[in-house]
Structure formats: C-alpha cells, structure tokens
Length: 301
Length: 307
Image (cartoon, rainbow over all chains, first blue to last red):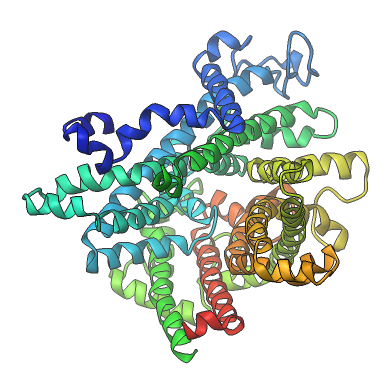
C-alpha cells in the first residue's frame, strides 16, 4: 500500500519524502544478515504452514475423545502422547498453532489500528486534542501488565473473541505513544509545511506525508507485540479467562495438564514448549527488525 | 526541587481520577444488565434483583453514583463482595501481605539475576559468556511464567522434593513462586544493564581508574556498576507494577493465597465489586509507587531536581 502511495509522488523525490521505496529492496537483504532474525523467520514460516495445513498434518481430530486411549505416553502412534480424555496431544498442539497465531495477529491489529489513529491525531493536531488523548492513554497505562486485559475480560466475559479484544485494547497505549512521538518529529519536516502551503488537506498530509514515517517503528513494535499478545492470551486462557473447552488452545491445555504433571508430564510439556518456541521466534524476528529498521541507522544510510 | 515535586504530584491527580472513573464505569460497560450478570446461574426473585440494585446504588443517576463511589473509595470503602458478603477492603487486606512478599521477593530475584547477567555480558562482550547470558535473557522474556512455574514444580517439588509444590506459608513456599516471578523480569533488567554497562565502560573515568592500576573487579563494581544502575533504578517502579500484576498467574500456578488469585476467582464467580476493588487498588498503588520512585530519583539525582 505504501509502495502504491509513494508511486504517485515524483520518483526523484520519493526517496527523501518517505524513505520507504529506497529501503524496500534491501530490507530483506539486510535482515538476512542477522542469523537470529532468519532463524526466527524460518520457525514462524514453519508454524504458519502448520497452522494452515493442520488437518493434513495432525493424525487425529483435535477434539476426538477416546477414553480407552487416555493418558498414553508419547509413542509412534501418538507422538506427544494422549491427554486424560484420550485426545491426541500432537494434533491439539498443531491445531493450537492456528489459535495462537490468530490471537496474536488479530489482537495486535486491533492495537495497531486504534493506537496509530489516536497517536496520529494527538501528534498532528497537538494542543487540547493531544492533551485529552494522552491523558486517556495515561489512565490506560495506570493498569500494569495483564491487569487491563483482565479487567476487560471481566467486563466482556471469557471467550476467544473477547480475549482478542481485551489483549488488543490493552496494548493500544504503547502504539499511541510511539506514533505520537514519531508524528511530532515528522510534522516538523519541510515537506509537510510545503504540502500545507500547496493546499493539501490535513487528511492527505497525515496519510501521505506523516504516516510513512511511523511505519517502520510500528512494524518493529507490532512484531514484538505479537509475541507478548500470544503470551498474554495464553496466560488468560490458562487462568480460564480466555478460550473455553474443548478448544485446543495452548494455555488452556497446560492448565488442564497440570494435574497430571507428576506421571503424565507430556500433557503440559508440549503445549508449553509450543508457546515458548512461537514467542521466541517472534521476539528474535522483532529484535532483528529493530536492528535493521532502527531510525538511527536510517539516518546514517 | 519543590517545584518539581509539586508538578509531579499535580500530574498524578488527573490519572488517579481517570482510574476511578474507568473502574467505576466497568460495571456499566457490562453488556446487558450487570445485576443479572452477577446473579447469573442463581435462582433469583425480582425482589432480590431490586435489593442488589439498591445495594449497588444502580437506581441512582450516574453522576451521583460516581460521586458516592469516589467519596467511599477515598475513605477506604470499596463496597461489599457479593459472594462472601464481606467488605472488599477486608478481603484485600487479608490477601495483600502474601502478595506483597511475593512481589518484593520476585523483584529481588529479578535484580540479582538480571544485574549479574548484564554485568557478565557487558564485561565479557562478544564472548560465549555474553552470548549465553543474552540467550538466557531472550528465553526469559519468551517463556510463559505459568509454564516455567510448572517446570520448577516438576523438577524441585515432584522429583527432587526440595520445596512444596503449592500453598502459602513459610519461606519454603516462597522460593519457587519468587524465582518464577523474578526470572521473567530479570531478562529485561539483564538487557538494560548490559547496554548501559557497555556505555559506561567506555567513559574516561573508567579508563582513568584502570590506568591507576585498580583491579578489574574494583573498577567494575565501584566505578562502573554505580552508574550503570541508574536506568535499572528508574524502571523499578514499572517493574514492581508488572510483577504485582504477574502475581495473578503465579499465585494461581502455585495455589498461593493473595490478591492475584483473589481477582481470578472473583472474575470467574462474577463478583464484580470485588473485581473492581482489586483493580482499583492495584492501579492506584502502581501510580503512587511510580510517583514515589520519581520523587526518590529526584532526591538522589540533582540533574533532575534542578533541571
């Protein structure tokens, strides 16, 4: 989308205006130099394939109950063993990929959209608009960690869609602050002034001249944000405040498996491992992106 | 100094008021009838519903309700728990000590482990020690605390039988939850300490100290560490809040009494006044602790109080 927008600007100036077209071709090249980022990316691709091809990969229906096969240890027929209802843990972990990736992406999308709009408006218009929006954000930040999501879940009721809304809304403040900061410096640029002089409306200036400046930092924060969204969602589900049974959600599976920890360690171990691998991969990619897209490095290039 | 304190204090007031409005609004944001939601599965007569409505002052106009809520809250009255019929403040008071002990121990674990990892990583920059410290830090932020807790229970309670798996009580019950809570936060402190330490080690006074012939450990601990600690100290308030909220998960994993576990059961039982009370209590404590940290910081660092 940014490419298309930038394309409408004369090519010779587009580099100075947004920096986006100039960076695009070598972003992947630069990112590929970071071994950890590549490792994170590869793991995420594998997880995405697992999520998409879940019905093909999993040997059993994730919710198929088989009491006679309950609590079987890992074997060639049940790679990760079976749980107390005889469900195949491997199949449930594979299907859980869908849920966790979905929760991560959707809740972060909610946060990015609301946060970017709020930050853009606050930073661009300044004065009392800024004061009101940022006071609002300050109040949201007064609820530490998972507390805001917890409060929202208690209002909306425990379910998977509500979980995404709760986690999404509680991550809004970080995006609003980040975008506001970038906008404050971006709107001082001469080209913004120039656009205003030639009669561009506020909407056009914000979309075309200010927004491109916040894309890179938002992408970095969103990548790391997906990691923490997956963690939070799994935590809330673990507490029984997210997805409801029999959904194969990793946090939920862990909480169901904890009573069998002593003898049937596999029920809780594999979903936990899945959460950690996913979050780790996302964090590694986010770190790599940050190093590549760091605003300070952009100035140097 | 006085001016900074007054400004900082005044900036806190709108946030505190905003928090009370947000928490007050929680009940009114519930889709449908909040009273019906709270009574849920219970068999209720219309009289009971009316009684609960009156008890919660839901029949009054909103501004009046909020005014009452605020004056009561300022006097420490957060209403009554629907399930236990006890004052919410009493429930919080009973459960708070256990949570505070856990939070502070977690903070201690986080600081000790985080700073040690950060110092080692910075001093041995680009060696295997640096790499492994940073890998541990990365695993720390990516590990779900409830899974780490279960792994520790599996290893140290069920297999080695060193510590009890669940419950509250003496010191032995505290170790595993505190370590679980602190390890996640230690990762953040480790990365922060490493980057500031690297910056400090390039300063001229470090070169001077080395040139004087001081031993490496003296230079690190007496000259570098003090300055590298500043960013860690500034985020202590934030970390405290994160850890306080983190007890929600940890207390559930270890079956430890505390306000974290209290709020989870309150949400599951739809005991709304109790949920509201705990949310308000944690948020206000968090705001005040950050105020306190900022004030302490200004007292300690003249650049801030005079700037």
